[in-house]
Length: 531
Image (tube, rainbow, N blue to C red; front, top):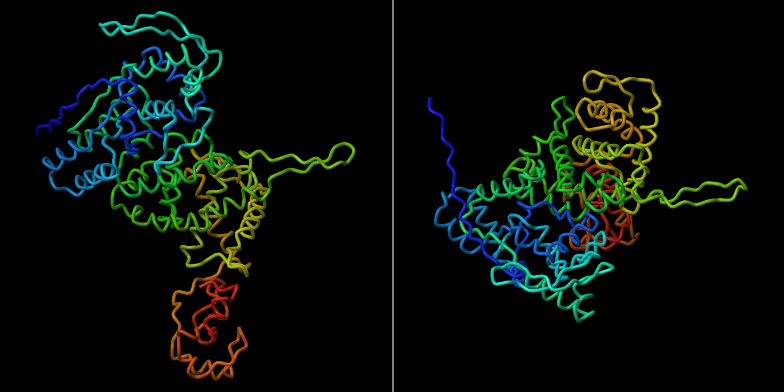
């Protein structure tokens, strides 16, 4: 049988040259297509942007190619040569979205360099066109302290040095312009530095992905960055959550800084999403296996379809619980040798220890919430309609401490034995299975016993035929307001409501025995109204 020969496409790209002043106008019209971009890691590395711009000042721009897709001709090419597949149409739509936003180009490579150039001109914006705040001292971008050559371009393109300008401290473009004289000459010289840009007009989705991989051969593309090339809805939605929540989880120590760079926090969110969908607590659980996320990120995957539900859960329960734990203790009280109280502020990146010594204890909280929901239960609410998050948090701590003091040994990877605390070193299944079993067989039953979780009523709709019998039972009195209810008002749903006596959020069922007829306005004002 003959082997199928791979088909190679020629990547048609035109090399164009722009001065820095011309290039910044191009970059203002260029969108960051993050499906083929690393996160803006340079902004988080101290002095990285300043170092790059300082190198540009001595001609580095000519050797550092930027790779851009020109949108209008690319879209026309794809429409003229497409095979009418759903994936092709989705990719074309993906490009058209940028065009409709007023962009003319997309990045394939050079996003960090472009961010630095825009930062030099103090033009760096986020996706909502807001100016990005200063990060790690890298914005606005400045030239490093050094002696910079000034001179003129020769006809052959080489540079003739005439003098040097010494900067004794970091200076921004605005600083140099305000200093005038030779410093202004350095700015004008920078504005006229040449940059080489490769512009493509015939790249399909696979071409673009391959180009991104090849351009990054000198620095290995991570699994998260490869996965990020998908243009599925889940990929986009996880990036949005990454943008919104990453700094919180990083700053308070729930994830390490290293595990938030280059879309690694997206993977962390993806693992939570996968468990939320597949949380059956079986021996087949593979929610923390990278290959699982590769499947989840595909268009129309089951986890993608479930993602809106996961996001709602994350924002309604999981994140509020994480905030509560983070803020539960913000300082430590000790006493000196004289018995005087000494208050020490708890470092932000140590706040995760309010839950316990291991970061993966937060994953336990996620698995507990998932288990409760899968069983058809809900966390109790208090009289102010708030979930009893603090009570669950304290119960978990007590349960964990009890487990952690036992002498029981648990089988780990390679059949080695470890303590309960060792089960939190990673989320590999040989470790996490013991935690799953403990949550399933011990902790959730404990929550049931203590009444912290209640069975969700699956049939919340009241029977309208109950109105008159309830009116008679109540002697025509509204149990909430104490006011008289006439037969006319009793039959008018715009005036009176059928209401749960014990709210559904507290385990109340939709039965005649748990129903009362009340005035609508009194019902809406009831402080513990939960459904």
